[in-house]
Length: 187
Image (cartoon, rainbow, N blue to C red; front, side, top):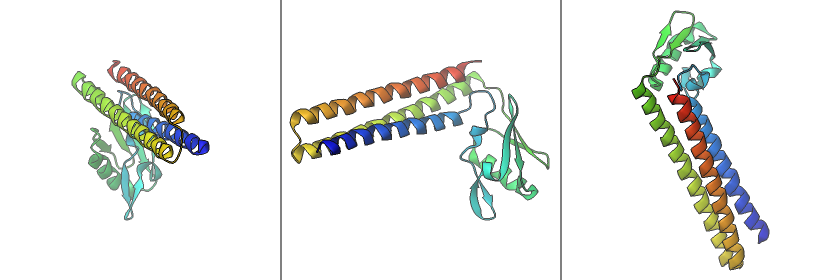
């Protein structure tokens, strides 16, 4: 019974760590004014009929603070890569010169910065919802164990521990969002 309880608490904490990890990857995709190759993560190119990650068909690098370059390993991939970047709707128009694709990141306006901050806050809220759902699942697991004979005091202690873990991870989400917001609003 105690082993099951420990397993439920550990699984909840592990799942919350994964939610934070997911938030971090989503926040790296939000542009903060400087060129970052991770902006292109999640873009898939039609590679001979199979959707393939952009970084597996081309070399993505930072040319300078406001420019990304995408150099395909095969010349015939220039057009599909360009189409995939346009279709991804990341707010950047690719410049194709026949050899490489350049992505010029425009300087962020105040309005655009606020849009990005809203997006960051939205990602943060989704992470909080995920963490709360994990908490709910953990507490439901504890209640099932309580029905199977776990003492009420032990169940309450386990629920309190799950709640403390939840609070800790929600504070972490807020810290990540605040840091990204500062990064975006810095001129």
